[in-house]
Amino acid sequence: QVQLVESGGGVVQPGRSLRLSCAASGFTFSSYGIHWVRQAPGKGLEWVAFISYDGRNKYYADSVKGRFTISRDNPKNSLYLQMNSLRVEDTAVYYCAKIGVYGAAGPGEIDYWGQGTLVTVSS
Amino acid sequence: DIQMTQSPSTLSASVGDRVTITCRASQSISSWLAWYQQKPGKAPKLLIYKASSLESGVPSRFSGSGSGTEFTLTISSLQPDDFATYYCQQYDTYEVTFGPGTKVDI
Image 1: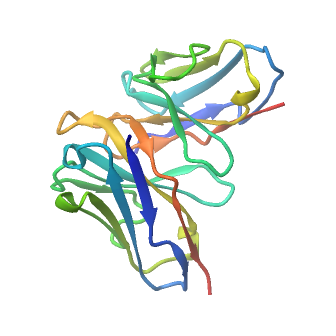
Image 2 (image 1 turned 135 degrees about the vertical axis):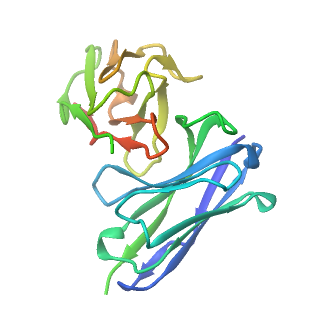
C-alpha cells in the first residue's frame, strides 16, 4: 500500500534552517509528482511547493519562494524540503502528498498524504 | 493565483441530515476540483476528484457537482463518522489552492 512518511520536523529559531524528508513506498515514486502542503495550528491547508515526477519542474507558493527548495531523489524514493530563513509564521504541520496523475499528464488531485511532521519556529 | 472560497465556514447538522457545502473559484477551473475530509490530528482524505468522481472506497452518500467556478459537495444522509472539516482544492494549475474549509459539527 502507498505510504508517505515525513521526518525532520522540530523546534528551530527564527532565521535558521531545517530540512524535511519524505520517504515513499508502495508505488512507483519516479512516476508521480509530489506536493508539500502545510497546516498551521488550528488553521486550514496551505500549499507550499510541487515537484514534477522527474524533478525538472518545481513550483512554489509566494510565501516561501526564495527561502524553500523542493527536491527529490528518485532512486532513493525520497522527497525533500530545504527550509531556510525560517519565520514564526512557518510554524505548521508539513505534509508530503502524492498526486494521482501519472507522469507528465498535468496537475492532479492529491490521492495520498503522509501523516505530517511538525515544524515549530520560535525563539 | 486562483482563490477559493467556501460556504458556510461552519455547519451544524444532525445525523441523517442532507448537507451541502459550496466552493467557488475566482476564475474558471473547468472540473479540476477535489474535495477532502479532515479529522482532528489526521491527514486529509480524498473524497471527490474532477468535481464529481467518487474516490474508490468513499461511501456513495458523498457526491460532488459543478464546473467552471461553482461547485458543491453533498452528503445525502449525514453519519456520525462524517463530522469533520471539508476542504475544496483546485488543481487547474500546479500551484494548487485550497478553500478555507467547512467544519461540520453536531
